[in-house]
Length: 399
Image (cartoon, rainbow, N blue to C red; front, top):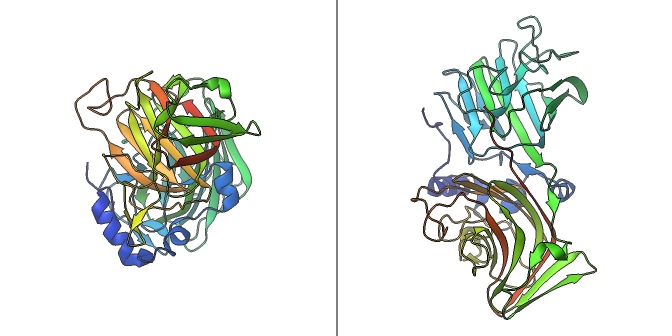
């Protein structure tokens, strides 16, 4: 298992490289890192590739993965995947790809890190010309053959839109459906991988939208107010959850273990807050904390003042602060085993693996058991609104 040559899994290296390619100016950072429109953010999309780094990706073989003109590119090396560090399930997916006549590549869904059989441990969306393979571009290898596969020519870009449900996967290439497949033995969760096999392959504009989230924001009955203490909460027009006041917490009545959460929130002023998860029920903020604090040092978004929005408090700072006071922002979080990843305004800002010894209390050690979700009131200055809080458990890996 070899690391990708430019994979920025180490946060500090990633920050220096991001700065070197033009992110030193605070005003430039959000526009250059995010590839999503406001409409896409509102719909729940996140970027899996920020166009500048391979943060959030890991190579499973020796390949010359590079970034050229905002695209991930591979030309030679060992057969294998560049795959996400996060596992996903039930999602809508978009990618653009370019390949030459000699290319054999693909996009793998719900995959293991090193898949052995595309009909058993993943779904492989093939990228190859029809005269070279019976499962041509737009096919699911070993499962469903594509209709009207496009001819590949380097420099020409194609789009793939894929709907991955619990049991069914549906593929569109360049806006036309090419195949679909219903699996009698669903895989559950898995990684997303970009394959290098032979020839040149390029990928860009990679994004994903989690599906089937349960909305909690507007459901007052879903929350326990017993530990609000000095804080107070109200539901504005029975929709927006508004938390204010001194120290306290609003706690979910439902517990979540491996889950995906997406929220839209706004802090009114310089507010320190957070979303706790896998928390010990009925105890004051004994859980992991996804920080909400937009303050930075020296007006530099690469330098969070106090962990930064989307950072895992006291564990890993956000690599960049992409949110601001008095403005709505979008935050997506996935907790899967000991891996915790977050996105702010569509850009991945944290990728942390908890290597501590197991402990009931996440403040003291690793906890994978289910726990509550807590909205934090940190102090008297707390003033935060939530317009969306969608959450659900992630499917287990079946094989």
